[in-house]
Length: 516
Image (cartoon, one colour):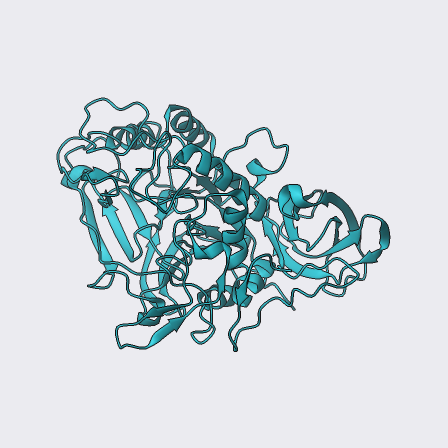
């Protein structure tokens, strides 16, 4: 595999020891929030930037870091309508090559007045199988009040992921905690204090569009994340905390929850999705994009297709999950039909199903005072019920259509584990064996392992989780996963890693099999 690289609005409390954006107001536009690339294909990519004022986005690309021979792409005019963020699509790129880019922001009234260039790089998808694929995945960033702590080194887990030189990062949801205010300090078990960088928008739960935007800006204050974004392109999905814990369409927030003046979750979700699309380069959420959705498939060459699910937008209401008929489920009928159709069309050796919630781990929801189900599994090890019916339909489809190379990746539960599902152990047996790998959090509270549901016969082959709830990043238990597909053999190796990159668990899967 080729190697790459030969004014904040609201109050901001800064601490020494971490390089934060300068946010100087000069006579030229500034791009101090960094750059990102996303949804990269064999010949195209999206590039993102944020300005400090209205500006014309200009992207220059080159095959070398010297930018000796430059190709220029004129991007959008960006302004307050998108919180001064902009995304430009680059087309006609060479496949399987390192692309260096830099973004300039030009004054709309005087194009000669431009910002200092903000540089990044990414590798386009190769057409050749022998090049292989390597990527990392995780989720759950800045949850439970554990924010950017300069004394801890900020979001240093992104440095460990960057050192692996991955082709891309699969950001598997909970990219912000819109419902999780971040205070200046939090007490650790030994009595010492965790000290956060704080902003006005992170001082309360997000309700307004400005507050949701501020949540995304907060994470970009971290130098490790900005550096990572500039060097590793992303595939991003969302889950619940981009809006509110355990939300579902049509939900009303109880009057007793005085944190919220806006009680209609659909209103909050619409604002959150708009901010999510403004702050991440997602092909189906670009301004003017016809799709306006999170779920999509990213084709990464002959070896890999990534099927990005949205297990939040189309779900039914959380409930005990014991209904015998449930056509809406957690994906909605339209998304399930899309997923089956795209899986059947795929000719990639491996089909990664990027799920923002696990299949066989019981994730309870008690936010409304009742023992409801937040994910798929509902704790009854018998025949499929509730949302399990939709997953059973999908697994049956994969078996009978002889779809090879499916692997499930997820986050959400704030620990890392590997589950193997076998029909011989299951109450529902009409499927082929498959693996589900869990990783995360990135910089959030860690939690004990959740119960397994026997409906699909899971066996927990590996687990690392704390014994107590909400362990801070200082206490460890911060995780990411790595997937490495060999271009020669086609073997797929999953490594579950700790915050510093230490390998905790390794599993190699063989290509060309329906189940294993």
